[in-house]
Image 1 (tube, one colour):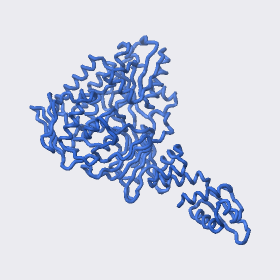
Image 2: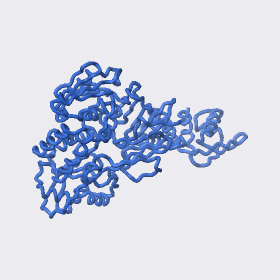
Image 3: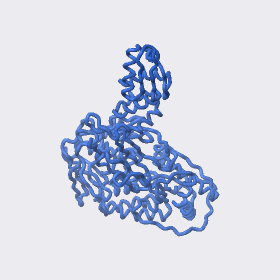
Image 4: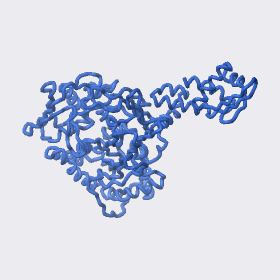
Amino acid sequence: MKDKLLLYYTRTAKLGVKKEILITLHDVAEAMFTSPRHSRTLLKEMHTVGWLEWVPKVGRNQRSLLHLKYSPDELRADLAKQHISTGKYEKALALIDNDQVLFGQLLQTTSGASRREGLLHIQLTYRRSFSPILPHIAQRNSERYFLRQVYSCLTSCDEDGNLTPQLAHHWTYDEETCRWRFFLRPQLSFHDGSQINAEKVAELFIQLKTLPEYHKELAHMDSVSAINPHCVEFTLNQPDPGFAGLVSDVRYSIQPATQLDQAAMIVGSGAFQVQEHSSKRLHLQAFDNYYECRALTDSVTVWQVASEHASLFGKTLLQADIAQESHSSCSHYVSVSGKGEGNENSQQTRIEDGCLLMLYNHQSRLQLMQRKYLDQLLASDELVVRLRQLNAQIEAVPANNLLPSWTTIYRPKTLQQLLPETLTIAIFDHQALIGCSTAISEILGLAGVECQVRVYSFDDFHDKARKGELGEDLILTSLNLDDNRPTSAFRWMLSNSILHQCLSPDDSHWLATALINIRQKRSLNEYLHELDAIATMMINEHWLLPLFHHRQTLRFEGILKGVSMTAWGWPSIKEVWSED
């Protein structure tokens, strides 16, 4: 109804807006292209909704007072915002003539949580589009968060290595035969309605082992078979008391084996199913047959909207604000900032498990003493100073090891070393890495070293690493751990293609041997202690240099209940609820 009213308002606006106009009803009717009687009805409606002031004068040819409060563009934006708030996105776009920039701005001002027909919907905006939500391809931090929403694993592992059931309700390990058995819940199904049983799980793991990215992790898996429809057995050729933790990783999310080759439609097994995934938005719908309790949130839509703060170092990962018309506000704001607004009940903050780091490529001509001297030049404190001089907002804390909780490493001063005239730096397209590479280039420039920075797409960066084709001297990358912290850290050290591409064959072999020794002899909750020692050794041997830990902050206000921050810095959308 208001859309049609806007048409008449737009015609009337030609008389002038935001000023008092003395005019006859006949002249208003001519501007509207309608009859005086109809124009009187329209003016009354527009006055009722607050678009204008109309003070009529009694008598023929008497001039009445007309005051149009808004420009047509302002009203279009306001009506479009109302359509967005009720999920009528196509109507909103049509109303603003498909203006994508304005649409993005309206999305940001209307995002948050809302109830429509008794169901809770969450709308968020994000600075980039997402890669396909598939567990078996290299994924960034946010995509791994959505993997957890769309898929389930056989087990779940927390940050301390404690296991809980997911699709498997029970599991056993025979130390003598190195056999693991996982017992599946009954009546499990994928999002397309097909059954999840032991045969489907066995088929998936058999196919995963053939993929190059899984070779190291599953090299000790001799066979996997279905004992019966609800029991799948893994036979290993060496001890692995923590294998139930390995299968809790997002890379081992349960999906149809056929999805490894082609995925025209994403089929998962988790709390949310993918309804739409395009370059503009990701739309998730709660899965009614989820094995656990159904999500309290019915749907989640994440729109791709370019960030106004894209130039800031590590700034603005996720933003959502509730619509103004609701007379209450709610924002989920995830950034790497620790100094946020809001009270104690509306903010959660944490230092990420992981860091941004620099790897020394073994293909480089850099000698040990040169690497030690570079460590000194590129210390985190020096980078912070340089980044501030570049007007970059630092939303991180200096890293003394790969994880904040690991051993703090102190480095003695090193005598000045002669460095190459030029050094090359490889990064993937990420604002924090771009900012760091710029700061590193300036610092080394003062030391007489010219730096050439090569920026790859995320996919190309990992593809080159898998092929051993990253030939740059210095590699900037990030270590981001998931909620299964012990297994996630172990997996990164064992099979991360970027790390092992930078190590010499001998060093890579030594690292793999040390990790396999841990896997054979240690329980899952002992992994982090052992990995701390290995990470400390790698840093002391100048294989890599930790730079920053991002500080993640989740801000919101009291309208939403049950909001907590996940390991990826995103809100836990399954738990969100509202009293409205």
